[in-house]
Image (cartoon, rainbow, N blue to C red; front, side, top):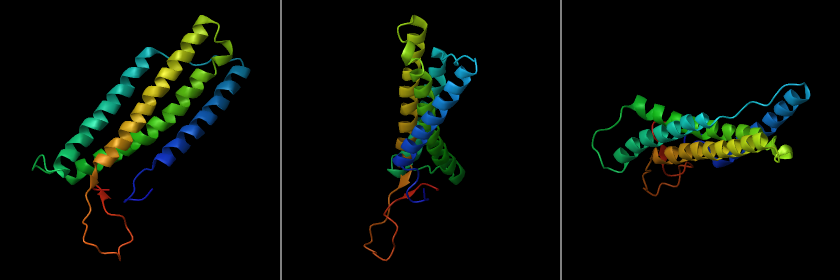
Length: 166
């Protein structure tokens, strides 16, 4: 990740995969030692939706300024905080995808039991919403991209466009 490129989607995929593998190992180890799997509740969807909406709302305000819809510039601190929040949502959402997917899939062998089936469904629904959180972070990051100058200067190796206040 560089200041010009920001967080890449490949990094999010890597974080999700690593999180899923580590979570699956930890969950299986806990179970083999006599512990129980954590219970996934529907209430966990609320923070995922709230944070995704908050990230998009904050990034939309930066985007409105960048496209000229408003003349009031955001403070540099707010722009930087918004960008960092979007990037944190992208990577945090990816980590949660792995956690919830692993948490749901450990119930797959006993899917014929109604309680296990419910935990599988809740885990997968949470994983989908965590993916939405990650996507909102990537979208928000792209909304914070400052349009670059297209002066034809080929001496600068950086691509046109930079992240807002990054």
